[in-house]
Image 1 (cartoon, one colour):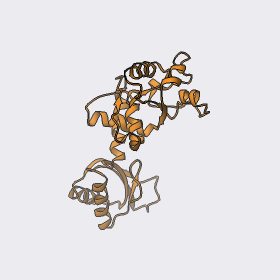
Image 2 (cartoon, one colour):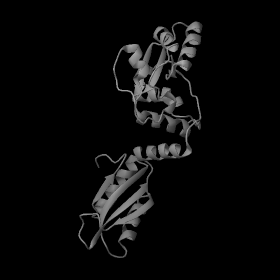
Image 3 (cartoon, rainbow, N blue to C red):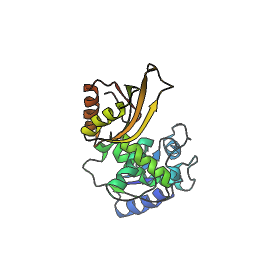
Image 4 (cartoon, rainbow, N blue to C red):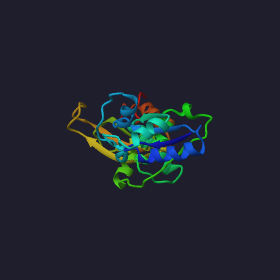
Amino acid sequence: MSQSTTSGGGLISGVAIAAKHINPKIRIIGVEAQLYPSMLNAIKGSHLAVGGDTLAEGIAVTTPGKITRPIIEELVDDIVLVSEADLERAVTLLITIEKTVCEVAGAAGLAAMIMDPRRYQGHKVGLILCGGNIDTRLLASVLTRELARDGRLSRMAIDIPDRPGQLAKVAGVIGGAGANVVEVYHQRVFTDVPAKGTELHLVIETRDSEHLDAVVADLRAEGYTVVLKGSGAGPR
């Protein structure tokens, strides 16, 4: 089984021709971003919306290639769509595990496996990883967002009395639980807390989601009301 990304269709057409010549039983699966299912629409006759701000710019194509389309129709066994979250996850895994920087479009094959691992279980799968054209700021954002999804970087709001020493008490609980405070901000104006109180906004770093739960439990045990914000927060 082999996976390749589809945009204009040049890469997957060449891969499919070569792979099917070597072994006609090899299954070729194309991958497109959910926001740009142009080739899938052309091949399957669907009418999914095409367009949007995808991270996978290399496969953000509105009109599939005229030359490649018949090759794909004949030799490619399926085309699947992947979400932006799966694309981000794929880029992060390649960096953290394989130490490989790959542009988002080039990581789409891995994103497809993340999306539907059962489909590929028990098969030998070949992934084509290509392209290093990724902006460093975008890459930093993707990695940070993944930390938040994993519960390793979290934002929370805590209501505290606006008196000296309160921040130190909160930080002591967090530090005692083995977590690290990354950012601190007091919100005294745009909040519903009483005038003698303040809303303490924190970004903390933890080992994983279980560690985050333990930190929140310790804060609540000390009488603090804790509200988690943003990615990875979930019900706690």
